Length: 327
Image (cartoon, rainbow, N blue to C red; front, side, top):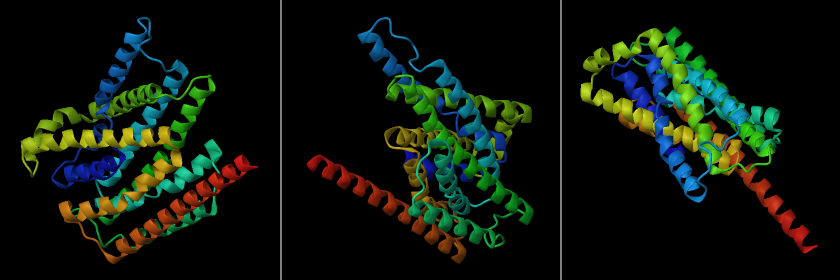
């Protein structure tokens, strides 16, 4: 799900903008409005509990954890708007490399919030990703979409980095909320994760819905659909698939955090940069200059360094555990 969402979400959002879409709040709203899909597994989980225990509660997650999830949902909504604003002025291939810098912020905030250790491989990855982003910034004129001024390109560049930073903060906070739930003597279960994601989706969508109402986006949708370059029917198809892909992304991200930890989620998001790059060139006919190639190599080098460091550390821990058992 994370693989599909990380690659498909940006492509569908950029397709919306490149073919005549202009509503920023609508684009942000689509990143979370797919939350009703979560009602299916949450409902199935409740019916399963109800069959075993007729007095089972509708929601298993403690209220304080759900309240924190609501706050995180507002953060997800704000992040979606900032990302949509940036993507409106950037090619998806450039945006993908910039979003990879979320690993920098994820590593930093994981250290501050979760006390996860910063290994040399982590610092090396951070340095390489930073150099890649700076390299892109030095060539702002080479890949501006048609009709986008230099100032708007820079605005999109800065906002996309801001979205990466905010998402790099949200990921550790999600894991921190899991640990708070476990601190009450409860296990971090599948049901708890899905209920938290449901609440986050509702509040993220509510945040963006308010923005759409104020900006009169709902009234503009029929007009925009009629003027869409691919036709009215395909306009609504793009919106539906955009919502589905972004929901896959959010569910996949929290699922990886639940199964492993925050840093792996950040790594996997960045790992799919090459796929997003290739899809942008193939389907959206974007330019792929030499500076993007170098930035991509630096990003992959950083990710490989980080992954190797994680693998070496896990192997050392396993060896130490076996030696302890033997002694």
